[in-house]
Length: 393
Image 1 (cartoon, rainbow, N blue to C red):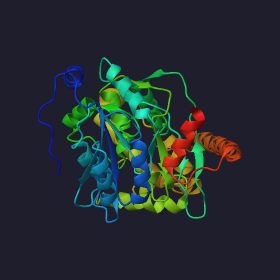
Image 2 (image 1 turned 120 degrees about the horizontal axis):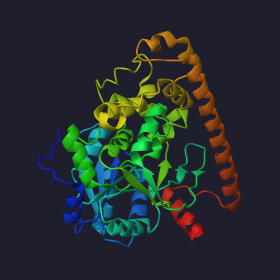
Image 3 (image 1 turned 90 degrees about the horizontal axis):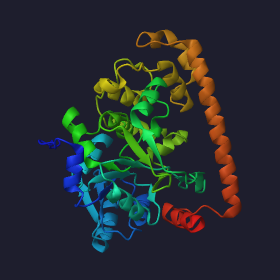
Image 4 (image 1 turned 180 degrees about the vertical axis):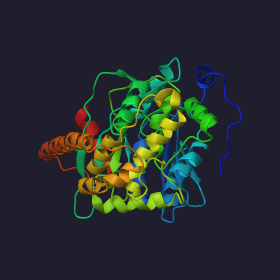
């Protein structure tokens, strides 16, 4: 379906040096029928003074007002470009389609309910232009929950600024494998990180495409350590994560949104998960470990000597409520037909995961109580980032 690159530069660093005079950054929003949140997301993206970036909105054959919303903004701001798949694609295929329209030396994907802090892209572009070699840049994320039904908007997480640091990608990737996919979010991916386009081109050259599995962010996070040793954590937020009623991100915290995840998995058709995973469990339980295991198989030079921890995997799936502890215990013989399973180790990781859940709930409750004393959380992400920027400045 997608055109493949036929020539690859002999060195990512040489490619970076030859193209660094071009457009610095492509910010990509892959969207489908969320014009109501997308309009506010675009407003945050365009609240930057730099002209050294483009905004590509890849519309996955939406039937709502998405085209009109984006084209009206494009008429007012030349940095915005609208592309349409013209047919319904899976998430990975939409990402692949969108990436082929990007011209920047660096690529950042965000969701259609996410946001960008005011002036943050200007600051990021300065960092990227100052890099002497292609380097992944990542940052901590604030988390904003959009209003859902009768529930008002709320703040799920505010990331404090931290000192700039360098992350060892290979060591971190191996750790993720050793804990069954848990902590995959500690690795950078094109989603909410600035990734050199040259790395993605190398990934496509080696594997035929950039995005594999049903989880494009998880797979690329696990794949990128094969192409670079480190990433820079800037320590300040550039983009932020928004979780709305129909987003997959919300599905991890609200049972009513799990149906969204199930729908997008069905769009992959007859996709088969990794053969070591138990196929009789819901696809929700297999989608993250599948992406990790696929990357592990594709890049044995990085992960070949690190065993995948299936016991920790099941504890993580139970934490996300994609499986129940009781069901895993009852079906342990069925699970063992596909991969090793040790009940005692599983219970050990269950204790760790449930402790992490309690800690997270406590921190969120404290944060929301503190924020409620200061102001009412604005009902859209545009107003939220403006209010947050005003307070932190």
